[in-house]
Image (tube, rainbow, N blue to C red; front, side, top):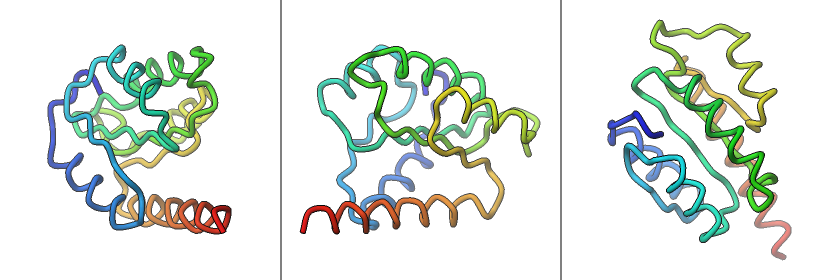
Length: 134
């Protein structure tokens, strides 16, 4: 996301997602919204994963998902967000519900069970895609 300069989380996610059988294009840290939308339009990904470590995931996530859902070319793109959604930690269920209502397909906060839920979701998606290709 635009304000998040952390990269370790992005490398970890890239390796994890690749291990689950997906090809990953890692745009790196501090990606401006316009660049994110342009890359999605150009590449046509099957899934977009956003990660936040700096605690601005909730606010930036709302802004990004609203722009994605308002774009005719990207409105149907599955989008996940995870990490530290707020600066206080342990963000409320209301914040998660707002992100889902705004258009995210799944939201994972920084609780320990988040990574298991994330990998489970991607594992099911990967299995379904493999089945559809047969």
